[in-house]
Amino acid sequence: MVKVLRLKKALAQLAKEFLQEKGWLAANMMLGRSVQRYVLLPLNEKADESLLKERFAPASIEYRNLKPFQPTAGNLKHLLKHLIPEKKIDALIKSYDTVGDICILEIPKELEKFELVIGHAIKRAFPNIKVVAKKEGKRTETERVQPLKIITGEKRLHTIYKEHGVSMKVDLSKVYFSPRASAERLRLANLVKRNEKVLVMFGGIAPYALIIAKIQPNCQVWTIELNKEAHKLAEENIRINRAGHIITAIQGDVRKVMPEIAERYDRIIMPFPEKDWEFLDLALKYAAPNSMIHFIVFAKENELEKAKDKISEIAKHIGKKVIVKDWRLFGSYAPRINRYTFDILVK
Image (cartoon, rainbow, N blue to C red):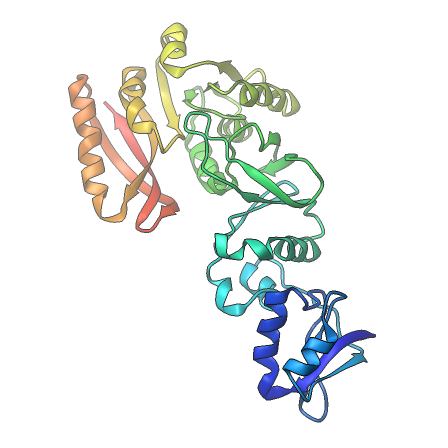
């Protein structure tokens, strides 16, 4: 039996919004209806019964059998429909990230008072989620670490993430990682040919390198990362996946490390869209003849031709000839700004 506010249908929407604002609606129960066309709103223990009866007279407080609320997995809007004011749900970012058993949300300031309700709802809907966290502040500029605040669940930000048959240790409090690049990682891995020498600049915990090694074990891959914590995890992930004979992980600044390696690469991947323009000249310098550079940047929808022209200008400046073979959109960044991969053939 559940304590409910029984009131006329005409007052139901107003009362529901009031209960949501006050935090008195029992989030784990469905709304109900009585045969006399009354609506039954489930209450939690915080609800002020006297105030509710007075405000929504002739409402009454009763005990009824209601069904537990079962949110639908995969749709955050539907999941929250009965938990926060419907007119505010659109303010939430429509998608959210799941890394292993950690769910990461972006919650607008006006919905922060509902963050615990949102967190609990997600954990009920997805039993495999053990931690719900929200983004808090901007990513650090160089190491790109996203500050996170745990809303509910276990007090940790480390987990095991699985992608395309590869298991990776991730610590979101110390490193940058995006599951949204999963499809692009697989696409690039499928392009790698036998005996290629592949370089991943800004390689993080080695997701690109590991997927490549899984798909095309007959190649050599170097992955370079400045963040020492990410490099440690990359080394561990390489051991976990038994890819040490394929992948070489190096910690350091790519501008210093690449001259020391002194290799020419058949394929170079640049997964640092905020900074890649600053390093394209370096990638071109160490690209072998007839090699491919996968250049990942943010660009405005209407300025893709300008981006292609800029790539050609940078190449020309250092005496290289290039052809932009293709470009692919694989994620949005801001209104009218998306993340693109430019596939550049270096002649």
